[in-house]
Length: 430
Image (cartoon, rainbow, N blue to C red; front, top):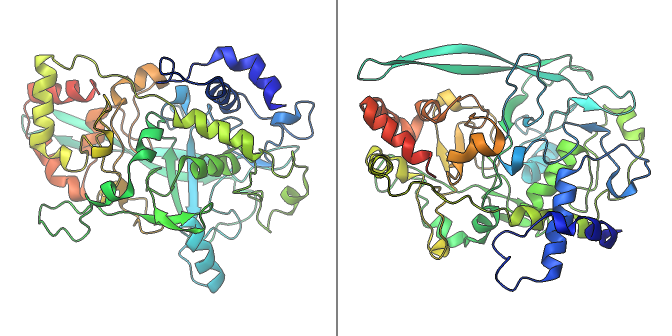
């Protein structure tokens, strides 16, 4: 089956970074097959296309590309009626019982007893989805030191029509857009020791920055390891992040996640047919992981422009680089800089979702890499930023910073308009 798909699709994809380096035909095949399974929709089982059936029974999207728009970042609904497609809603409760403590060891938090740890809005064959997430917004007003005013949008998440009963009284909810995939393989290649070298959880140097690692459960290795991917550094590898997304977003099981996300309260969900056991075999999952691993980082633009260079200095002077560090030693030979320490930072109450995950508190978030951020509109067709997409542009994203980044935000608030424009020009060059 795999070779047939590869023959049909191998000419559609080019393996980034390897085209002129003696790359092997097998690498092109793996990248092409992985790209096909990343982009093409999955269908309900049983189906004639048994290579990609097994959608659901509960799901949020029918393909990886539906969330990672253009292989880039997702966005929240942009209208009142648009569904949550590239935004997930994670659930969880503080663990109390011994069973919940065990669940929290592998999930980072105990699941809601009825709805699990992800909300799936859609179902197959007449099965009701779990509920419909909606955002409402309130305005937050402020002013720069030069007198120019600004308005931010603060989202409030609501779940309409929960179809399987009430959520637990202490369920925590967190809306999160799909993160961009640029440079994932490079980030995975960074030795854990290099990431940990930047950690300062007790702020011993008294600079107000207390980056800390998240230690999470690696299913394949069956041990606790350093987290480096996703919004709270709650995934250890591209493989586990991909398998988790297949299960919780599309309803596709794998050897890492062999059980459908149906809870015991969802009996009809458990009765519906599956597309195999598992629904995506290890070799096909490996090609998707290979495809994601080799997503390139876009090259920078206008790096020698005087305004860009001024913005780069302002980025440093404001304190942005304390968390968005440009380089890791392991990437010294790469032409791109991630601008992230991959550590957790307390971003203040304004950005808190109050849903802890492993060592990450409800107000702590991983520093997102900035490489490629200036091409978000080009790649994904929008300019929404932060974990829930509340910021409509990069300046709004900065203005939501608090906690450890409060002083940096205040420095930006004190900038003149030409300085703010230079800072944004630099960010858009990344």
